[in-house]
Image (cartoon, rainbow, N blue to C red; front, side, top):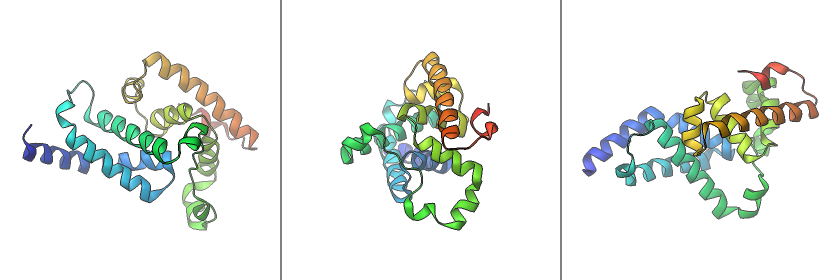
Amino acid sequence: MDNDFANQKIQEWYHLYSDEIYRFIFILTSDHELAKDLMHDTFLKSFYGIDSYQGRSSVKNWLYRIARNVTIDYKRKTRPISFYLNEWNLMRADERNCPQRIMALGEAETHLYQALNNLKHNYKEVLILRKLKELSIQETAEILDWSEGKVKITLFRAQQALKRQMEKEGYEHEEVYSRK
């Protein structure tokens, strides 16, 4: 593909999807600067891999998949032990006590993110894509490279695990974790 055309496409996609991709990576990493870096890596990787995009899924799903893989690769390279132990902190310690941050999130969202932090990696990913990003089952399956059946089963189990985790933490607002 012509480099000028590829550059134009990536710039267009960056303009359309960079905020969504950044938020997705931030939820997975809990680090603003790292999320920015990995988001840029995602678009750089998409530029070099644009010839491999065959249009079988939407551009957005293709970019989500690249972002997921870039994030996983980073975690594996930099923290192999904690990657496998799923030590994903959604709020950094210095941000946790920031009154503006807590007020902005709201109590229900704070509990949700804290509970989400304690789930298995697969559960966290499927909940983020299906419930927070509101992607379809088909889109989620494309991004995770799973069957639609696996997405449905994992989502059901993830919602149950999230409910148990929130109850364990003393939070009983059912609407937060059973929202369709």
